[in-house]
Amino acid sequence: LRPITPPEGPFLLIGIDYCGPLKRTPRGNQYVLVITDYFTRHITAIALPNCTAETTAQTLFNEYFCKYGVPTVILSDQGSHFRNQLMENIKYLIGYNHIYSTPYHPQTNGMVERFNATFIPQISKLQDTEDNNWDEYLQAVVFAYNTGIHKTTKYSPYELLYGRLPRLPFNARPTYYSFAKPNDYFEQLRKTLRIYHQAARHHMILQNENNINRYNRNRFDPKYKVGDKVLIRIHGNRRKLEPKFSPIPKVITQVHHPIYEVQDEESHISSNVHVADVCPILIDQYL
Image (tube, rainbow, N blue to C red; front, top):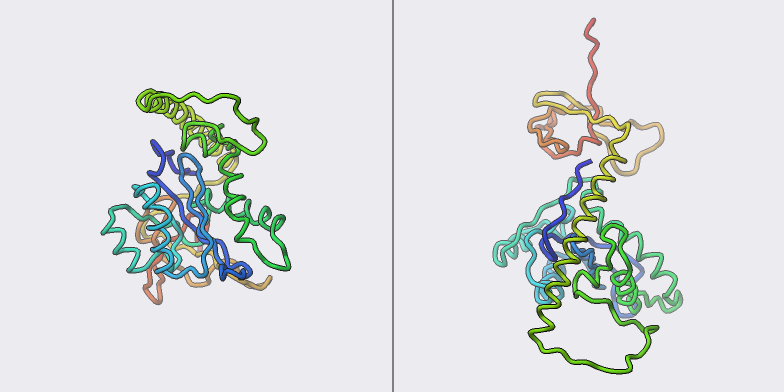
């Protein structure tokens, strides 16, 4: 297991992904663009009518870049709504790096995938199934997630972002108000955020180490070299008796373990695959 190294601070590395299509609402929304900050675990989710490249670009700019600034790196899958000429142009115009996960390996962007699996059940509990108004409750579900304590960081995303606890409906009304000078508040906020961020990053590193040890325990980690002939796992709908791996061998042309570039021997088309989707061809040495 090779987890992503925790970034040094908020909004340096973000993951983006679409959830949907969901049942279309009266407002015309059918998709949710989910944006996750890999440091604070803060979630931004926007209900959208479609997932075209133009909608994606406009939403990223208006709902994220103009509110939180431009990240250093964006991580996404290789869907056509993320990997296209428009997004390439915006990347160079605004100034960030866009990296893509390996096909059929959603664990690369697992943080966003986990939230997708979390908020769908919550939305289904709140929405009116007859009116199908899930988009009306989306922000409430996101706020609940952002104000909850995260298992890895030991802080809520809200605390790591704003440096204070959120005031919630069940909190008692304050009986008095005190107003600090702006400079005093700024210094206190800076100290608080520094303590929070250092502790949260330490917790992330410890969690990564625990995940690595648990994942690698008794797990075979094969390594291949350039020129090896291998078979590649077949993804998608497959009947029970159909083969799990491609019948046509492929040749490894580049090694970036755990990612390998393989080339089809017949069509000479190259593609990137994860080591988990590679099967070696074993040749009997006595033949």
